[in-house]
Amino acid sequence: MSSVAREWREIPGRYNLQGTKCGNCGKIYFPKRDFCPKCRRQSMGKMVPYEVCRRGKVFSFSIIHDAPDCNNGIKPYAVALVQTDDGAMISAQLVDVDLESIEIGMPVRAVLRKLDADGASGVIHYGFKFVPQ
Ligand SMILES: [Zn+2]
Image (cartoon, rainbow, N blue to C red; front, side, top):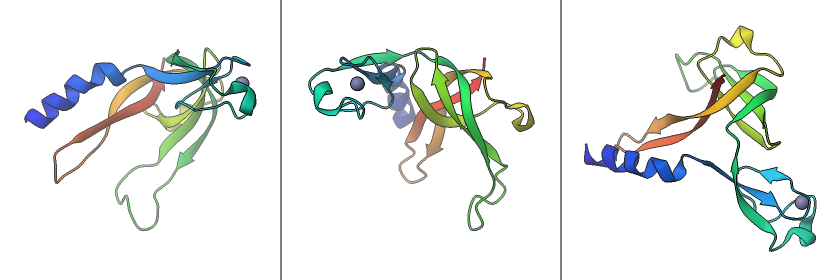
């Protein structure tokens, strides 16, 4: 399982929520952006790397039910728009939570989770999801 080991070794570099901060207005973006949609030209060359806070709260959410043609047997799941403590907006799946208990303003934190595994190559992909704090 050398590919799995290699994948794990890559994690520390990706583990931070690496976003971008606009040097003009101070707004934080995740994922990274090359320019600030608000400042546009004024933000060019002023976007700086920024490690986004992993804690935040649920800004809005929706419960996704099974698609008709796929995901058979997969339970409904929640996708939330999370506002981090430093003001970035991140859209991600909400896990390890009772769907009925999710509410606007619920404190959550980002965790790194397995997203899926490519059966052919055995490569496992990781990404951020949110869990209750
Ligand atoms: Zn800006």
